[in-house]
Image (cartoon, rainbow, N blue to C red; front, side, top):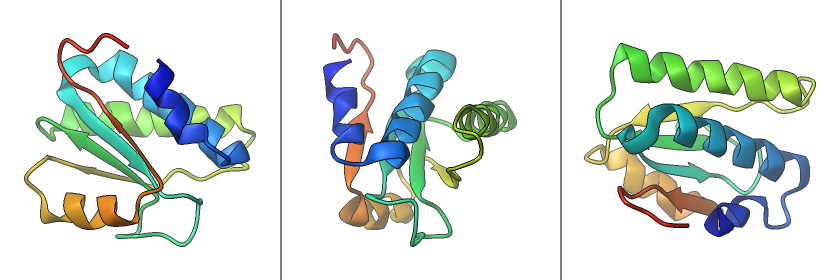
Length: 114
């Protein structure tokens, strides 16, 4: 879990909410989750999003789990944060553009031992 701490580096409420969001996604999606990247701040948005969620395959079940985790985390933080996820796959050109702007990135690799 140590590398997840990158998400909260100096980011306060926003960083803690993204950390919790990434943890929820990791436990729910398992090896279907490739990466979570967050902008340094909740706004301004990039591609109308502030968190990039990269999954191996984007299907209805994955989207549903991501949106469920988003709503849960926002409720846990008393609606003081708004997570706007961009849910995509590794081959989407938006990934590279988002990563150039992202303040923190957490990659999930199969067989990872953190």
